[in-house]
Length: 222
Figure 1 (cartoon, one colour):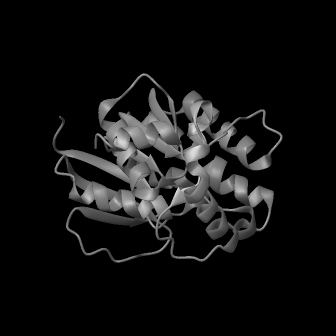
Figure 2: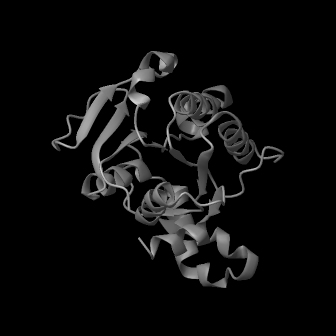
Figure 3: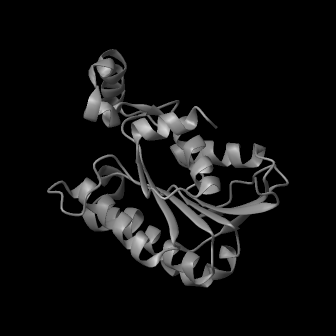
């Protein structure tokens, strides 16, 4: 088990990202967590080093990448982004740029959040974009780059999403019907995804992408 490790986290204010930050600060293997934010959140933890980043010019922040592990928890929705181009910027362009910088600075491991069904050949814009991001990161990022593909996320989300609330209720009621190859579509808690991300970064597996059922299994060993 490696000690005195450092990590760089993008998307620390998000649903999974905030949970991941908690885990990293509690993990004795990490001595410093660099958090790249758009605006200051004024963290009260000596292990956290917050840096305000201009995402339109990430190259100017190349110095931040002198860390062991990079975690990318960036993500938005079409509704919040406003258009497909803006969505692609957050879910494809930024992660790709981050991965490229991580490789250039010899980051050991990179773990990023993708989505269940990610496929660059998909007819669905969301899963197609996620699939493209995976491919770009594997092509231009560190050799040890991994994608986690959660299905529906459970947990205490700050913002209210009616459609998501209904979906979660249905998933929790009928999720047990998803068996065999459909197990990967079962819902998963934000903390389980975060736990799996930390485990993957420190175990360096040969597998490159992990679906919800695999993440849940990994989290039980965290």
